[in-house]
Amino acid sequence: MADLVTARRSLQLADDGWAVDILDQTALPHTTEVRRLTTLADATEAIRCMRVRGAPLIGALAAYGLCLALRDDPSDAGLAAAVAAVTKTRPTAVNLVAAVDRVARVVRLCPPAERAAAAYAETAAICDEDVHINQAIGEHGLTVLEGLARGSDPVQVLTHCNAGWLATVGGGTALAPVYAAVAAGVPVHVWVSETRPRSQGLLTSWELSQADVPHTVIVDNAAGRLIQQGRVDVVLVGTDRTTAGGDVCNKIGTYLRALAARDNGIPFYACVPGPSIDWHTPPGAIPIEERDPEEVRIVPGTLPDGRPGAVRVLAETSHVANPAFDVTPARLVTGLITERGVSPATADALRARYPERAG
Ligand code: MRU
Image 1 (cartoon, helix red, strand yellow):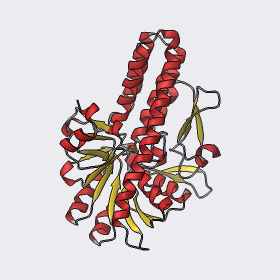
Image 2: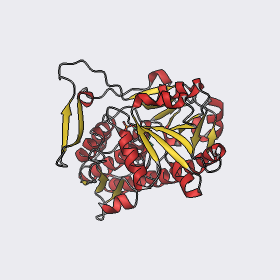
Image 3: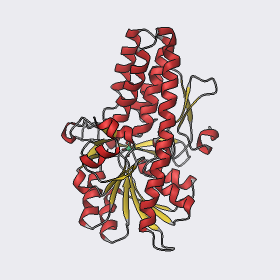
Image 4: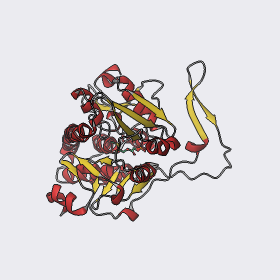
């Protein structure tokens, strides 16, 4: 367990070379628990319950889910059933379908006896690519933060949700520039929005605490006030799906931060890995996940004796809407920090950066 935390890895292949060890994000920030996933059902449960979350990470685990399934049943029918099971876990992050399609395309060309090995090899390639993408986003994002630095005063970054190493295979997307800035000696301070109802901001706070990065947690509704007061220099967020035209789908509440940033002349950047770009779906057709109302009605935490507990704050009969994502229009986005550099949020600029994918 300590290995995963020390290595800042939220998921890795187990010592046996085929099972998958994950850091259970539903236990964080209170306890660090590692789970070993050995079946397709383990993988789909982990994605659906958000033990593993964040667009690049669920893409990687979805791919591993196919690997685990193909060990049991490498037939065409087995592959089709596994693809269907994984694809229906969470609808919004395009990384998930992209990773599943990629692995399935490769294994379909192999005889059944070779499919599991081919799936593991392709999944390893997806994971390695994510590590490199995170690294490059960190480097390009660092130039943005360096441009905002003013001597010894920290650059004030506001982030939403968790787009750090917990949410990726590598070092994160929106937090990668922060870590790069700390390594380069650029002083930073991060405002972390709590991100109700799943409180991914608490994961961000845990991550930043592990790395001794100065930060302050705020309730979600405080973001506009801080931006208005001039206490934020830049908003950095991740993405679950960015359209070919540069519209950024991300955790619910991202749009409100972009509006406040624009109204106050503050730059708003999304950190966008290539595999998070959906070249085909228009913004209005992005499937926005509607999650269980009980996530809003029940607040988890720790009891006074340190054990995990939960408090019901709203009756089971109260009506609740729980959309998990929103879409920030490209016109509110200052730039997209990709692994290929900082791009304007326009179709032409994105096409120019990814000529082979934009097709
Ligand atoms: O519902 P979640 O926690 O999976 O949502 C995660 C986000 O919205 C992240 O900002 C996004 O996936 C980018 S993670 C690098």
